[in-house]
Image (cartoon, rainbow over all chains, first blue to last red; front, top):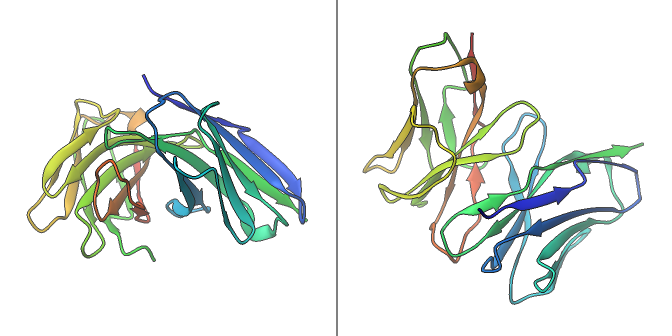
Length: 111
Length: 115
């Protein structure tokens, strides 16, 4: 069946450095790619999303890139801050009303 | 605050029992989604309802069932509970639920502990 692979499972970066999380999807019909951030004790929250007619999207320190040929997309966080510490989930949505979720990446920002 | 409410916040019960988790979506949202998150695990999609009808099904066990009522609130019923059912259960809602996709707003979750 369809799946989304997310790497790495844990990422530790120095405060101020950049962080990159990568996801690969299997369903070539996927056309919607959101990223959610889950802080400790809370539900996930959408931070950025991209649709298949766009290759890159930026929102301040966060950017997402999409390569439809290779079927992968990435989340880039620049100038990381302590409040960026959280679990990040990628997902891919196709034509069947269902998002397929990655396994999550725990991002640790070291002071 | 996402606008999605879930009750109860915590639930402790014994194996073999049955529980009901409740979710109220954001005002105006027609779709409700249920997810299970075990300790240090990812989000497992269980089921989606759109305007009262089942829209998509994920890895939902036969012991679990859900429904969405005319006022759009939803309930997830878990029966014959096992130790492995202990998890956080999230409800999310969105305006629609079709292929165009919309942001899902997650509730704070219900933590279920099965002893």
